[in-house]
Image (cartoon, rainbow, N blue to C red; front, side, top):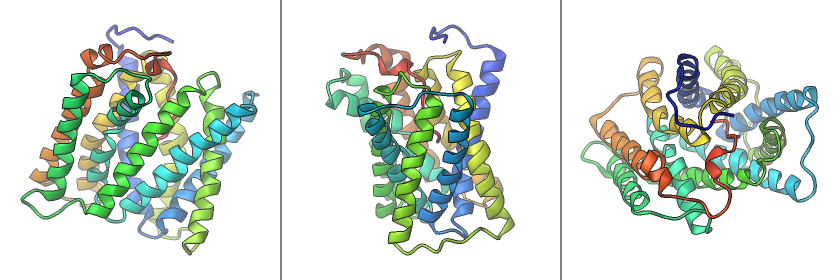
Length: 313
C-alpha cells in the first residue's frame, strides 16, 4: 500500500471521484427506500443482502475468521457501524433531506479524532478544538437559522448519535486491522443485520418486499453499488493513498448529495443549508483532515490513519 503524499494519478482521482459520487448518492437511495419501506426494515433488508454478498466474497477468498476476543470485537464493531448508526440514519432521513443528513455525517472524521483523544489514542490540538467549534456552529445554523427549520432537533440528535457510533466503530476497527476488511464487513454486517431485524420486529415494522419501481431500484443500488461497490472503490483508492486522505470522501459527500437531491428528488438547496454545509466541511477539514491537523495529532500507539477503512457509507 502506498501511503505517501505524492500527487495522485489520474486513475486514483477517477476512483476517488466515483467513491464520492456513489457515497453521496447512497443518501438519496435511502430517501427513496423510505418512501415504501419502514426505515428499520429498509436498513435490515439492505444489510442482510449485503452481508450475504460479503460472506460469499470472504468464502471465495478463503479468508480466516476472527477468533475469540477479536470475534467479539468484530461483532461490537458491526453493532455500532451498521445496526446503531444506520438505524438512526434511516430514521432521521424520514424527517430531513439527504443533503442535510450528509452535512451532519461529514463530522465523522472529526468525531473519530475527538473520541480517540478522549481515549488516550491521539493528542488533541488547538486545530481540532477550532474545527469542532466551526462544525458545531454550522450544525446550529442549519437548525436555528433565519429560514425555515431544516433540521428538527430529534433528527439532529439521531444524526449526531449516528456520527458518534460511526466514529467509535472506526476506533474499534483499528483493533481488527490484522484481518482482511472483507471478512470484517462480513462478520460486522451479519451482526448488524441481525440486530436491525430484531429492532424492526420490535417496533412493528411491516416486512414487505418493495413494489414501487423507484424503491426496488434504490434497494438494488444500495446493496450492490452503494455497499459492495463503494467498498471496492475505497479499497482501490486507499491502496494508492493514505486512509486519512481517503476519508476526505466524508467532507465531499454533501456536495454530491445536495446536487443529486435537487436533481432527482426535488430537494431544495437553501442558502441556510449551503452556509451550514460550508461551515461544517471547513471545520472537519481544518480540525481533522488538513496536513497540519494530521501532523498535530500524533497517536500514542499505532497510527489509526493508515489501516484500511472498513466502512460502507
